[in-house]
Length: 332
Image (cartoon, rainbow, N blue to C red; front, side):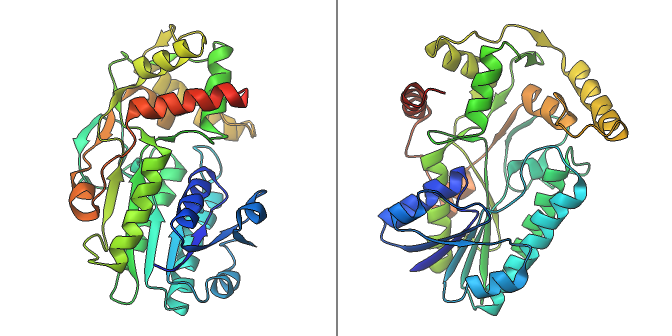
């Protein structure tokens, strides 16, 4: 692994990954639509463009031996066509560009939500099938893209898919600020009985997993053609964990609650009525969000341990301390 192109490298995980690759002495280029403001000062080569343009990709990826594909349309609300265009057709273009440039390794950033349904998922591994009824178009499109990437694995182009769960840490400009804002305004409400366990992944550990996956594809390739769950390896009680975090920041804890059934039905209703009423903003509740907040979602990382040598280097407690320090200095 000598020359790496990170697609979507201006996002939260992408920025941290690029910094890690540069510190390891790996020549790294960011390919993204959004310009990375500190790219030049960090010595990062930046190419601005859209993965929907296959000719742009073919030209941009010439000369690289590794591609790490993090570019996607995220979120749980939006029209299906936009998710399909970016996450499915865009990934098809990435595969075509990799083949056209004889790129040896492709690491795809996937998500555990490809296996989400309505029930708890406790300690399951990668044998868990894809969902039969996807709870949002994001998960649907990522499952299609992940299958495409894994089916494309060959001796010429080795591929792997990583499924990090709830990546958090310093530098997150989306999830953490939004969560803190809702907590300060007392807009958060516990969904379910509050006993659900979930996996989380500290940013440095997620980055480590991507680096190990790329190295594996250039080495023994024991992970080629396979997906892997990535996490801290120890689930947390979601609501206790959040409240401990809020207490340390002197933010009101979450005390109000609603049942999973009510939240799920509310989400179903909003998903149907918002498009009918042509409301563009994201509803405050969806079926996916109700399941995410009320059900347990934690996964075995034994396969990542064995095949990739992935073991979380930063503990959950250490990660919390780092993010508290970051929040206090960032005035979030």
